[in-house]
Amino acid sequence: MKTIQKLKDLGFKLTPQRLAILNLLEGNTQHPSAEDLYKQLKPRFPSLSLATVYNTLEMLTKAGELQEINIKADKRHFDPNPAPHGHFLCRSCQGIYDLDFQTLDLALPFDAKGYMVEEYTLYFYGLCPRCRQGQGQ
Image 1: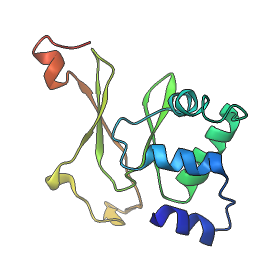
Image 2: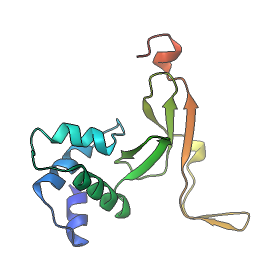
Image 3: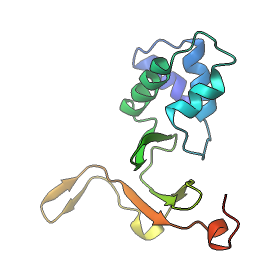
Image 4: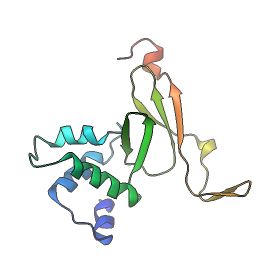
C-alpha cells in the first residue's frame, strides 16, 4: 500500500490501530466519519480512543492521502480518494456519494481571473436515484 510507505517516509509511527484505520479506509466509498471508524474498530482494539482515530485522520489528510468532507453540518466525513471530485448528499437517506464530472476535471493549479486556485471542493445536494424512486431509507 503506497500510503503506508508515504507515511513511513514522512516519519509517522505505524501502530496496529493506525494500520487498521488505513485498512478500513482503503477503497472505502462510504465516506465514513471518525465515529464510524471508531465503532468498527473498538471491538478489535479495546484501548483505541476516538482521539487516536481523529489524530490519524488529520495526519492522513495533511499528508494528502484523504479528503475531509464537510458536507454535513454536524459531522466530518473522510474520503480515501484525494483527487478533486464532487460529493453529493442525499437529503432523504443522508448518503454521501462521489460525483465525477469529466467537464469539471480542472487541472490544478489554475488561474481564475487572477486567483490562483490550488484546490477546490464541490458539494451537491438533492435526492439519490434510490430515494427518487421511493426506495430511500
